[in-house]
Length: 481
Image (cartoon, helix red, strand yellow):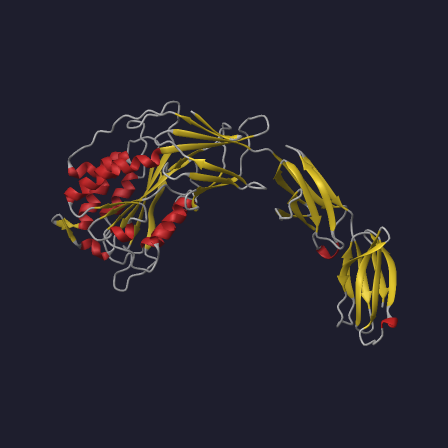
């Protein structure tokens, strides 16, 4: 299915899903919850699509409150048993890696420590036994630093690309260290580190505080836990929408990449995801896992930026957004090095548009969308270069003449101005320091100049004097006032 957005298009290809079976026995309900939270090929089969690597980070509460009773046993004992069963069930599931972060288990409460969170088992293959061993040997001790733990979880996924990353938080209490776990979760999702987290609350009265972290399940008892998991099966499917962004060159081939992309909820302008466009080794764009729900606005951070509105993704399908992105380059340089180690800068603007699009520095080559640009060089005097045409895959080189140096010497303060002579007229470019008696050095483009001045203490305009001179590239000119 193709929906046209002027010269931009969204293509959607259908996917087929089989209905999952639900195991009614409570002890293994959590296992099915985990399995159904992920797009296992045994549960969801998508045609002509390679199953991505799934990485699940368990963030496990081992604070002292986990000694509390739940279903006739301590919360720790029940949660440990169920999580070990889950780890066992995932051991032979292909394309899956697990990790375990525990908090509240190193320092006793009171007083406890708000940095009591540790990645006990990092992501890796065949680490299931290590995770189970840590769970069996973990004893509840400390406080509940949920926000800190989620923030640390960002580094747990470092270097792990081309995967579907998920956090499952199991807790029996609220944040106790003054952090904002909801804000941390939003940042993780916005930066594309993880999908919307899952939170399993072992107790009641926490939904108002924890449901903003992600998909929340309130497990007051075993029956409620099972009911929450059934609801989760309907909610989890929202996260199974996939998306590919194809950035097409002038020939309509999706070969453009390495551009930052931001997805906004178009209705309230809330930033939802940030990604840097990436190509696989085979030269095809990376697949993104997103929520299908918002009506999106996509901004490509090109120069200038490109925006695509009214993006509605189809749930449980693979969506493709095709956007033409033709770019060329501008290179700014001088014929020789600048005096005093200074750099030359230019203000890049769209032709006929006074707004500054970008600031380019001498010695740099920057990419811009194809089209017409004006370049204002921040030199003395200012240099305006108009109607610079940027063509696809071409470098438009802008070479600024090497400037010279003017040294203004004076024995007493003067009031004066520096002008450049242009087509028989004087154009003001600089006012001299009226209180200084020290030498003043200025970097000037080659050309003819004039200083008009008088002594600061002089009371009559008749004492006005002027000095004419020429600036030559790479040379220093000294004048005495």
